[in-house]
Structures are given as C-alpha cells and as structure tokens.
Image 1 (tube, rainbow, N blue to C red):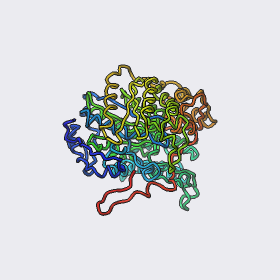
Image 2: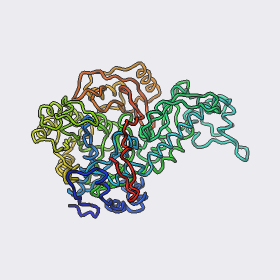
Image 3: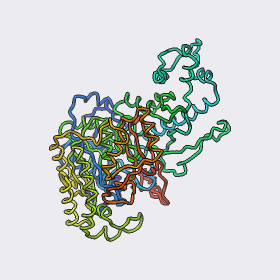
Image 4: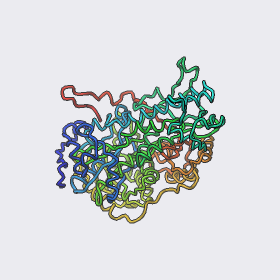
Length: 636
C-alpha cells in the first residue's frame, strides 16, 4: 500500500449503491493535498474552491528536463447500449496503480458536456467505486472551461454576421475609415491584428494612408459568401429546436436573413483547438487560423481576418490550464477539454497529458481515455493527437464486456427501458465467441501502431467462467499482450490490480517506435482510404459535394492535415446496425469539412448530428438539490 497521505481505503458495499450515493459518502481530500503528492507547490496552481484547482502551464517549463512516465490510452470495443465501462476502467486502473501498486499515476479525462448529463446518457465521472469526485462538480460547471468556449465561439459567430452586415451597407472607403479611425491627433494606424491580414494579402505597408485604392478594397472587404459559412453558434444544452434557425429577422438588419443553426458547445472547433494545443502561443495561432467560410472568390476567411483571434484567446486564457481533481481513492486526475468523438477527435488535452507525464516521472503512469470504440477514439489518438504532441504511448487498453460481445455476436436488440433478453443473462459461449470478432479486429488495428494491447473484461455477476475464458482466449489469439478480468466497479482499485500489473508489464516490454496509419504527405483521398481499410471497407464512395470539398481544400493548401473521420460509433461500418466485424462494404463519404485551426480535415460518413436532442424522459427528472444538506442528488 502506498505511503501517500492521499490514499483512501474504500469501504465497499454490496450490492453496489448508486454512483451519486457512493460519491456523496466520501469526503474528498483538499485539492492541495493531491497537489502536494505530485510535488506541486501553491505557486503551480490556482484554487477553485476546496476540491478543484487549475494547474498552470508554467509547470511544463519548470519540469522540461524531467523524464516522462509511461503513457497508456484506454479505448474499447465498438460501443453498444449495454455499456462497456471505459471511463470506469480508466479510473479503476489508476486507483489500482496508485493505491495498491504504489506507482505515481495521473488520470487524464475529458470534461463532460452538460448535454448528456441532463439528457440521455448521464454523467461521465466513471461509476461504482471507480469515480472522479466531487462527481457533481465534475459533471456540471467544473471550472467554466466549456462556458469560456461557448462565449468565444459565439463572439466569432457575432463577428461574422456583423461584418457581412457592415460590408453590405458601406463603401470600401467608408469601411476602411471605420476599421482604421483617426486618433486624437488625426493619425490613422493599423491595430496589431490587422498586420496578420496585411501579411496574408502580401501588403508590406505599415501606414493606412499608404495603401492604394485597390489595396484598401482587398484589406477592408472580406466579401464573405454567406452560403459558405460553416461557423455556427453553440450552447451546452441538448436543444433539438435550435438545429436549424434563421438569423437577421430584426428590422434593423435590413432584410439580411440567413439560415444557420446551433451545435452543442463540445462540438465547437474551439474545443478541438483547446484539446490539441501545446502552449498559449500555439493556441493563439490556432484560434486565429480557424476558417469560418470562404470569400466569394473562394479564398478561406479566418478569425484573424475578422480581427477577433486575439479576443478569442483572451476568453480562453484560463481554460488552457487543466483542472486537478481526485478519484474516490485519492489518486490525482487532470480534467481538460471535451471534444466530440464524432466530428472531432474525442480525446482530452495534450497539455494535460504532457504535464502529467512530467509529474509522474520515470516509472510513473499517465492513463488517458479515447472516446467511443478504438476504431474512432484510439485511431484519432494515435494519428492526430500523438502527431501534434510528439508523445508515444507504450500500452493501449481495450475494454470489453461479455454482454456487449454477445450483442456483436448477433444477440437480440437491446431497447432502453425494457428488460434484457435472457441471452444476455444466461451462459451462451457460442454467442460470445461470435462477438469476439469485433474485439479481435480492434486488437489487430491497435497493435499495428507499435503498442502492446491489454484487454480489460469488465465482469458482471451473470458472466460465467466459460464465457470469460472464451474472451481471454480470443484476445490472445488476436495478438493481445494480456487479457484480464476486472471488478473495479464493485471493488474500486482492488478489483483492477491484475489489470494494473498487466499494463505495467506491457509498458516495460515495448521496444518499437509509434507507427502511424498513414503519412501526412499523401492525398486527402489516400488518407481517407487508409482509415476505411482499417474499418474493413473494400473501398470508398465520394458524393459530388465531397469531391468538390476535397478539391477546394487541396487547392487552398490544406491537404497535408490528418484526417478525423466522422462516422457512427456503433459499427466499424457506416451502418449502425452492422455489429461484429463487417467487411467488404463501400464506405460512403457524404461531405468533407475542415477544422483548420484545430488542424484536421473531417469527412462525414452519413449524417452526423452536432446538436443532440432530449428524450421523452431526460435525466433531469432525477436531478435535484437536497436543500437541507446542499448536496446534489440524482446524478448518474
């Protein structure tokens, strides 16, 4: 057992109580105690109450010469409505490493969106006796990062429509005079951000009065094509009625009506920028480079062209610092960023991982989670996140359950709110073996990156020894380094000790470099096709719109970016109903879009919703405040 003062011995109950009841039964350590265990001094962080703190990026500069610890990514099989427990496994593994195996460890997780918390999925703090606490703070406002993203995103949206409005009502000269007004002495000057646009236009002059009439027009008139605008407004609530709206209907807007819509805040490109940035300077550049649409001549228009990149950075200056929290057993957690795993890359931030790797040092562990199945989250972790971070993982964990594998083997459909079919509650080894084709493909794909793969099987009380043996055998045949049974949901870190030992051995025995799925210098189509083959596709079909967008992004100079596929998480294919490991299908690309600031091209496979809707009975029916104690109840 670790001698760390912040390790807490759990008293587990059976049956396992509700997540919020477990979370509320534990008094968290003051966050300064968690920080002290990581050798962080009070100058390294800003307190946000008693149980949360923002770790400052200056820590990275101070620890620059320190060696990194081991880097572990947790992915899963293709998700099913039965749930695989990926977040719970991530937390349980870290509790095992820190509280039972006496290793320095940091868990790195995404910040949950309030959309699912109040909608259909519930929170994302883990579950049972493997959770991040305080659970209510983790699942709600936390330290306001998502609110900062919302504010920055909507400032840019307002700037776009306002610029179109002013350009439509003013001459070039009047526009220029208002953009560069005279000061008290009657002199005009460019603001600092304007020099970015001048440089982009190839204008080297530094005084407004020196510009020719042609240069004045080029500089002042962005000439945004309203049909090309890809930037939408956001809010962190599931609100289906905002998916499509019209703006500009007020009488003062002089008939400038435009159709647009809202996305959920975590789908904003600014969220993806936060997750992929490596420093404050890098974030400023990425925010300025975000493309919001094109001019009528087909040139990309950026946030810096609109003069707003610096203001966006100001709104995001605190959000760039990761939030320090703790698990139920007192091991440290860094919570940072929460990009969608469909249209973005679905991984927590690079800066949190980099800080954590330095803090744990040689022999320590940083465990991070990749959203959805390994075909989406782990693939994007390797090919996008690791490319920008320069980091390489030694081990990838793939989480599976017997029940979910039965569904991939052809088990009956699962309907929310209805009792499970007996097939999921009684022994059926052939059904499990049939479903292991899904697990096997994830193992093969993940192992190809040059990491060791450990399979974590989350055990349920209905699972039999024969079924578990079938999964472990199939895992080893597919090339896994090890496969272990876990009970961390019911027992906390103690139930993941075997997984911790397997992960440690896997990390210690890796001796090859990271292999990417594709090089960056091939064409957009070749990169898309390399990913499609990893899904089992025999080829790719591009719509006319997709062809047009690929041609445009190539012409604009963006073809060297990595690819972030936007497809259903429920199947290797584009068809959510196709379970197991389908192959030989043609993958249809409906459209191709770009997040230039974040740094990726994202092809759309089918229709992707970026604004979820609320179900008939949302989670908020259960959520309330116990006014006598001040504690939140009903979070799941």
